[in-house]
Image (cartoon, rainbow, N blue to C red):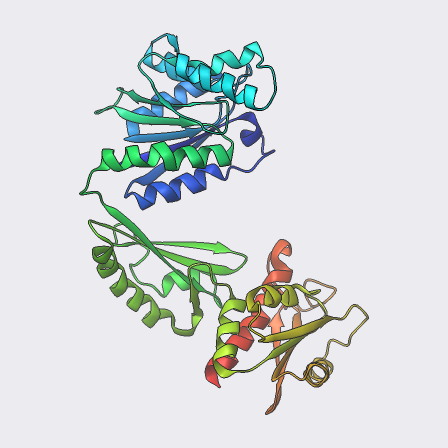
Length: 400
């Protein structure tokens, strides 16, 4: 069973507001074993809405849409669904009574325009909205090989989620039945090479015909491998996934630093906690980014003691950054200190070689220095350099 999620509104297509409803709904559909194959965002245009619903009904078993159920002239979902079905609107007395009661509880007079929210396409079922004026719509669109089940919900996230749990999710469970499929994901997080290089290290795993599927995405130089299995039970999914995980681990080794939503700082905090060691930082070029990451990741563990941001000019030599690391360790009384030097002023050296940022680590065994290449897209140079420094620390902890 496949789904399409549709988000409606000019505020979305214009980029003025981020669509978080589609992400949330796709996650919930996946938990029911319903795979979302399509996301569509459409503006407040009636003809465009009609085309979108017609297309969705021909390629999806389940359609969940949000938005366009308000009382104003640009709320077009009711009309679009009625036009696709070729039916008239009908007035729902129960919905109208609920809308009136809501205005009454709020000590407000109901505008006449809100009456339209009680109008539904003929044959539609009402999805009650306990805390809003817009009831949802549940209907069948018989345009494909079999009718598509449509659930139209308000765009307000709090209302949409409440209506999902109370009405839509139980309806879909009944639709799917007891023998529903289960979809499980496993995410492996990597750092240290480029996307193409990493893919070349995983022979045949990224091919679309591979089962389970393995997708690869990159965000600020962190590579995520998403393994997805579909089976009739969670245990069967795990049985599909684990051999692929083992192959990836064998191929990538220390390039892997975590799972799911892990970032490098979370892995480092776990490694330090296991060793009962503490960390302090001093940064120049990264401007406190590393301190912010560790403050969030360490929480109340006591692993991260604190950090300093150096804004005054600092020598960019390895010797100077090593002294920074030593002084930081002594000042904070930490087991390990990480120092990151200033960023170079130019993108390339005169001979065309990328410049470097000096990184140093101090512990009770002495000071270790390393040069991090200062190259990459300008928008991610700061987090990329910070991650290179953190990865240096992670690898040293693994080798200790």
